[in-house]
Image (cartoon, rainbow, N blue to C red; front, side, top):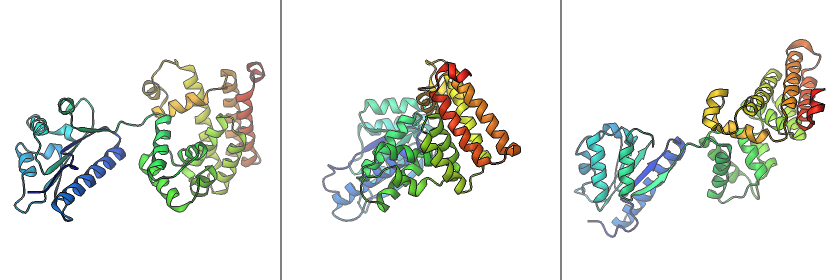
Length: 337
């Protein structure tokens, strides 16, 4: 029999669809359980590990997996996609939560949707340890995620650095977390936008949209700087005009929609992810519909010049960026002229 299990969490329920957060929560719960089992056994044995899918868990199998081994050491059982467990197995999991094995840790990952919802409800009533990992769809949620990642690694980053990292990397949480880890290990002092730029500004797949975001937000110097970097690193001018067109069109579509429309509903209507809708709504501050129309016309002219109608694609791009910024700042009467 193992010694005191004061640090062992008998059942952890991880709920949500954000894959990276779920995977990390499972890893951390596993590490905590194995450390507690090793401590209780007075050695390095972290118990037997059983990792299986909810659909594959047979009726009566949970009891066997969590029963004491002839050799001691306890056990850790991970059940992934618990929403797919059979009804009888879900009932067993609920009963287990009321009277868990003394030397076992069970970790359940559940997608959190309608399927298998009763299991989550029943386990919540049993007051099991629950970790929520909801999908991050808003721009503000991804900003908070990056802030928290810097806190996790014990580093400070200013708001401009966080925004630059999101511009360069995009919304993939796994890549964002990896980027934070790299910045933390490779740099010293407070992390700012210049620090991020040295590592990530040259990502071609993000550069065009970064130029567009800076332009529609009225940040002329940053937009021109990103443009020059994009061209220097080989980004095709036509990709940049395409990104500018997308950015300005989204301003028009989102601006014309009801302010009460949810990001999810509006995302389906305009063909953009919900987190992008939140960001466009922030970018709309300072814009008038006349200014959006003027900017769209300027982008169309630049696109024609870039595709062969002008002498210099680089000049056409710089000119249209200046026109977009001017359209944002112009009063309605000026924008119509």
